[in-house]
Length: 438
Image (cartoon, rainbow, N blue to C red; front, side):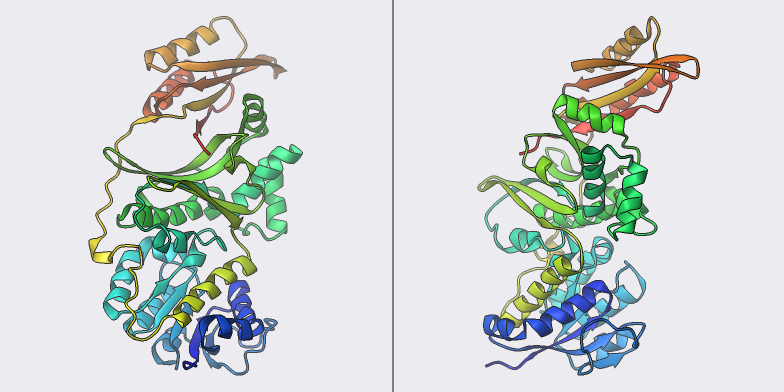
């Protein structure tokens, strides 16, 4: 049997402790599967005294994760610190420079520095594995990097943030407000005390940027993603979507077009009968559309200690199965130096159309003015629904819901801005894309 694979773990929070526990509890099974023992020989965390539910007495403790990366007697460095700068970036770079394999769950680090780190890993001939960085326990990275050889990806999209999906699921199922669902998500540990990174789409954008690079062979461009969160979704939107046969999900979408690559994160209406509409709670799902395979949908636990630890352990096991002299595949599916500069797609028509909800004064001439603004911007309407809202503060109001045919984002925004300037609105307008989904 080959020599044991020596692992160092930096970061012993929920995920790090779970990884250490799985490696201990599943030691015999992993040894059989990998042909060698996997042993945690070094760890680093801020607090040595904290009870993490796993015996780490056999591992050497390092107060400085960079020292662990550089000097520990290890083969694999596991980074579970988090953050796109500081200790996380420094220790991953140090481990790669030292010729050690790296496993990370850090999507923010990869979204910002992934290509540069990939170049170092490939130059040193070591692996940089990051399955846990996107969609938790779902093996989407392995699928795209290894199992889809020969396929040309045309579009990748999905539910990539469990917090947002949990909130939208509860809003629909129980008729609760966004604020109430967010508070409950925080209480249950699904959302952070400061949930901005999740609910405003940043987390989804980082994950989407990584998938985009894998899908299209481009450099990671997390700063070139159109991003919109779910904090402005109301019960009125949820109810209107259901009435029209849709369900609202926060999607990350990347697709190749004639003019470049389009990346966007925003609330989306998907047909209730579609598979992705059935993904509820904290579950994640990723759909990949290719020329050979057609559409593949991967779904499963997207977050949490066990789901993320499962992906991290899988990456470690892949390294354990490799042998000296084996030529490792490139980090992002193509050699890092061959990744093409990201070319942002030009604005184009959105095939799925748009949902527009307007709360307006209930008076003569309002609807005619709305229709004129749509016509002036060459927007064709598929359906129109009106609901009387009654009187509030002495002002009679109604809700007008418009569903458009294919049109551009610019045309919709210009038309809605025009309606706003006309003085007909009594509340902020709502615009949500409608996405074709399998």
